[in-house]
Amino acid sequence: MTDARPAPEEVPAFYRGYVDAAQGRDLPEALVHAAQAVLNAFGAVPSAQIDHRYAPGKWTVREVLLHLNDTERVFAYRALRFARMDATPLPGFDEDAYVPAARAARRSMDDLLAEHRAVHQATLALFRSFGPEDLLRTGTAGGKTISVRALGWATAGHALHHVRLLHERYLR
Image (tube, rainbow, N blue to C red; front, top):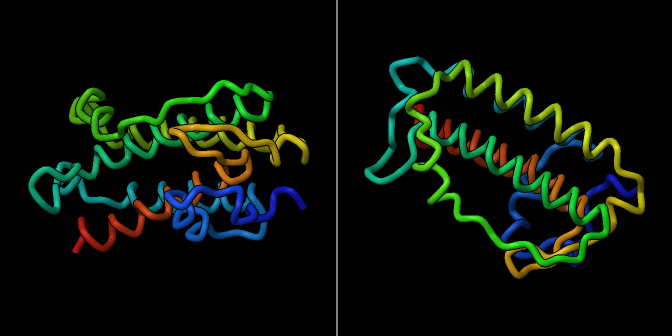
């Protein structure tokens, strides 16, 4: 079953924690679960706390949600390229540069949550479109080889990682 969790050799060390954090019996279930967790958790943040930082220099709640949207897009783009057998090595991305450039404070939480729904629907449709052979293809991003299905599982786990941090560090 190719939408099962990826084998260890398909997942660079940096992504293993995200893949392990994902919840679900298969990839579509894991993606749906993660998106619902994001919408529930971030949608329940009181408006007085959306610009809260748990420490100086850390992102605000609003910036974290924007980061989730950006990262899901980047991972889906990588998955698309690798599934289509594009062997061009892709660069990494600097999320610490993306966040201030995106100016999250200009956007409402409702807008960011609506964007998350749209990004997630596109991600889910993309991964559902892949056949078994597509999910097993690999490519290089940020100097590391990763499979298409590992990118999907990492997408789900990355979202849950930030939901956990939201509860542990922002909403205490």
